[in-house]
Image (cartoon, rainbow over the protein chains, first blue to last red):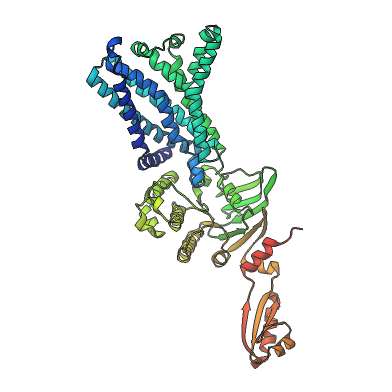
Length: 273
Length: 297
């Protein structure tokens, strides 16, 4: 029962030793601060506090960065062990494969949450200090941090899936890059193309929002935007958010980690060290 | 045979369309040390993987301490030392063993264990700084965790210097003495010869031999070599008792195990003409060559 905690503890130590935790936190802090300062210009014209603007720009950042960081830790979770030749020994111990995966997930998610909390927290504190913050913008910041962690969780599990399917670490790295590109960039481009072709028809009004929210990255965006009017105001992306029920984006983001974990578990079961 | 802790019966395994294990049956009882020999690709590692439950079998029965391979109970009873064992380089030896101890649910004396395999100084150093021999020792330390009932060692001496090999076999003897069934897959014939109770030889997925060293020699009918050094004239001796002269002063006779004493009596009857006598029974090297190269009928 506590076996996954033993795995998690060892994984956590590895993340500290190989500086992943430090680098990820540093990246988050630097990007979040840069965006907060760069995005502080339109504060006056929109009539919202600086933290709100900052949260809006950080939302855009997190859509790219959270999946990237998550995939960077998780892509070699299984393939790395296979390459090194340490998986066979690990699997000869009484811990089940699900427990091993769960242990890694717990450690990786904790590390990701730490980086997000420190990164966005710093930026939020700076924005609040210089430009003021209201209760609503503080809630928006908390929501951004929580949803970023959830988005990270989705891509952690997808990383394990890819790592179990790939024959080597290099293949896993390549597949992860492809996954990131599809979910974060190509999916939206495809949808955009479809909307342009459809020119305001049934697809655009009824199908498009659902297809969009099915992608965890877009669900993350929609959730943060739909939940806060002022964030929506600054991001100018309200159309799709209004066409969907409130629960659609949270549901998508909550279900994805479960689907991802189940798929990764299934792929990992077939791995022969 | 209830005392066999590891029982393999009629094991078959297919990889794609080719069958890599044909009807292999092998048992190991507590305290027994069995060597599993064979060329690369003979199926030794596959056999071990199946016993560990890492890959499924296509036929046959296996019982590890009475449990199916891969079940929690079977895995708890088993210790495994993989060929060219490796660990995460960022962890220290102590941390790695702590992890394994927690996974197997054992309270273990980690420093004592590492001291036993000669790694006391490297306890808190990262495994990334270890030499190959040290990693192998760490692998051996995790075998000793939690008193296993079955130990599967895949090429345990690869990368070890001669002294370390001695230590390793001393530890294996201890394991066996405590009632653990030990199966050693190896290439190092001379080491295995002196250090195991029984020898199993695999060829192309078939188990072609499974007996004690003496049993194997009798079965193979390999000749014992008698080399006689003559005091003066080797030709005389060669003409009197047969055999071949191999250099100026020596004659060699090949005889089967049951004729050995008769031959010796004839040789001693020659009296002063014989200066020295050397008896070489068939070695594992010869036996291995005999069984592993035997043409399939």
